[in-house]
Length: 303
Image (cartoon, rainbow, N blue to C red):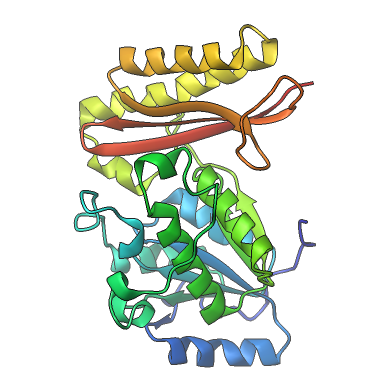
């Protein structure tokens, strides 16, 4: 349930003229938040892997409407990358991230731990969190173990920060549903708030991985959102059955030069298969351009 608006504090932790404080260890994080809790201030968490773009910054602004203190975590989590994925080359831009957060002028604390803070014995031996069902479909089918890594790192962040609210973007729709299910199943006392997907003028959803696209691929990438938009409109009109629309979307992505991973129409609430009686749906797709994997989705409601 959405929480009421909370006015941002009048005495911000950082201002435009100073960079946000950075802590790297669990003890420093807890000490930094102790005074805020003693004053009865609400704390919001915005988990990120850094390389912040306008989408991330919009989530931080949203967090400022729900709490007086904002923790932005910056951690490239090895547990959610497969052996052949882009962990080593994932952009790490801490100084640029700090500058972008500074310019927001909001009460931000940055938590930027090293890997051994989260995984003292290494990621291979770490205890893990499994979210059954939701983790094996869609992106989970082609990235086995990915959502286990996501759930594990997010639960660790919840335990370390103990936030009142946590903010996630809807571009990673399956991730959002995995986290909501984990919070429900494990009775984690945190409210999950979702932020709208932020897009380029041509519709491409903002992503740190967009930086891997060359100029030609960048033009091709716009077809992902355009295809989903066309499917959503056809679904609302009732042009064809769901499986026919999914096949149509697959063909359109291939025609545009993308390699589809999946094109799927699901129920919003649990990502289960959609039927004719379902009204709140989401159209999702993942596809590759070269070595870059792109994802996107559009929520719709059928009347």
